[in-house]
Image (cartoon, rainbow, N blue to C red; front, side, top):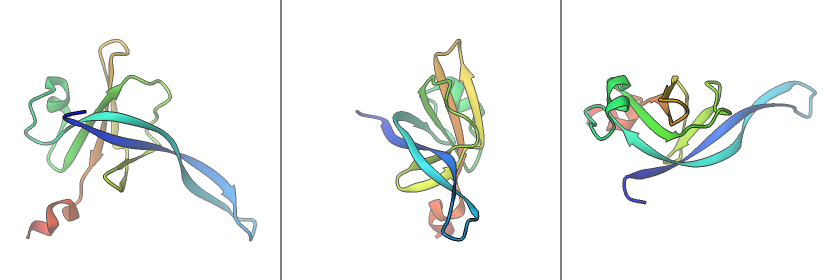
Length: 108
């Protein structure tokens, strides 16, 4: 699939460890093929309007079960969801995640 990135959404799940304390661990939920729009991207007009510096917009088909407390795994890196935007009436869902300086090799 040209121009698409495979992402994994992870749901938060609480469980008890051996000492009886509650530990929150993300569990894999579902894979999606997403269109990735970074700063300066113009392939998706709606996504390019909500992308900011140091952020990436991942566009997937609409799914009502995606929530803001999930994690997104892209290229082996887990990132929290910063925002969810619906385009049209259940047409597409735009997931905003923030990149850090390590994604730019710390400027080197």
